Image (cartoon, rainbow, N blue to C red):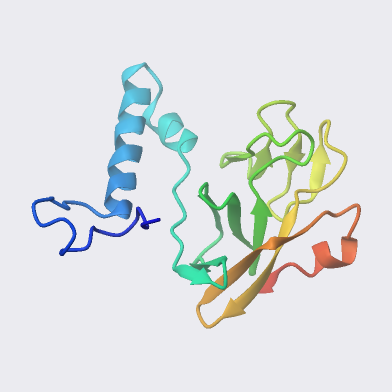
Amino acid sequence: MPNDSSPPDAGSCRDCEWTADRREFLRHALLATTGALMAVGLPRALAAEMIPGPLTTRGDVRGNPSYPIPAQDGVQIDKANQVILVRWKNSVYAFNLSCPHQNTALRWRQDDGRFECPKHHSKYQPDGTFISGRATRAMDRFSISRSGNDVIVNVGAMHKDDADHAGWSTSVVNVG
């Protein structure tokens, strides 16, 4: 199956026009979505906050996505791989996008500096620690390792705080 994120092979599609790569397409889609939210009356800051920036992988390392180490504290989301990448207090974490309570996609609340589940309002610190709500445990972390200026997320190794606290606690890369 061809990779949809790369241009068509010149030999297989001589008359096709490849005008934008995947990153450019996503940028335009996000701008259009933000504009649509503003058109229905949302303030610009709120519309922009509702659309998290996409996280672009650097590549694939044995079936696992790799990402550049974030330069500063913040949150990025890779919906395709169901990964939330967080840099917070000189540490990088990789979380499962779904809330551990009922698998609803978590949202980052920039103004509050925390994650929240939109379904039942469970709240989590940037390091995934459970704060309050219906969930009974912290956000699920993926194993993560550093390779130069990148982090590799092992999407096949997810750690749940209540069942594998040791694995959960060590699923972090220190960058400070």
